[in-house]
Image (cartoon, rainbow, N blue to C red; front, side, top):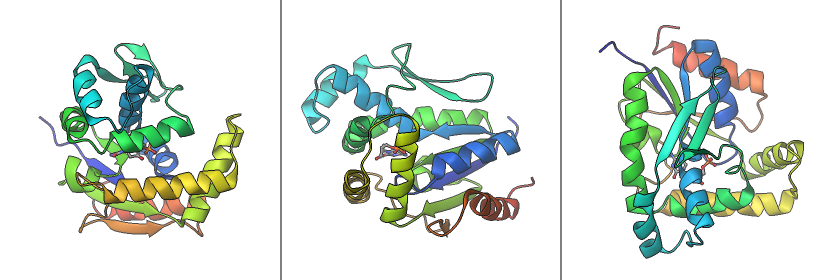
Length: 226
Ligand code: DC
């Protein structure tokens, strides 16, 4: 099999991972893999069944009944399939963000999803974003970037994004939720959010999108022929 390249982008919620990764994937002709969407699909499925994301027995009982699918449309947009049903838009709520964070802490959930993420990277050049891509999913990724920003900046960006989508959002509430998610994602036992030793940290608090893209391209260009 031909060599495939992998770029791992990790960082906390709202750091701009998906915005940057989508842009770069388009420019480089790579697949963009949003791994958060996979955990969101699991959370959405359990939510529909009325299973609490904290209920480990319930999660273990029902996880086998879910088949998560990832498909790409002709524009390269990632679609999430829950037992064949497209739930790409349904999983993008603040409620599901919180539930995905809780559900992703269970060992059984992470195990089930690990191979599926690795398989995509085996078959394609990928830019994959998440929390544990550089540390656990693709420890041998060619490039690892840790994208971060202050909680306040991330909350501001996330509030604007939600409002632009027509959803209700209040800055103070979004900030609290982001801080709670940061805590959960960094303190869980299995595959917590942390920077890989060989990752390059980029704090985007005072940067605009173009600045971040340029900085990321520089980091990537040092490791991969662009
Ligand atoms: O990136 P996101 O906000 O869509 O992710 C939702 C939640 O999923 C996040 O709070 C933690 C979990 N997640 C994870 O545990 N590991 C990943 N690689 C990606 C997301």
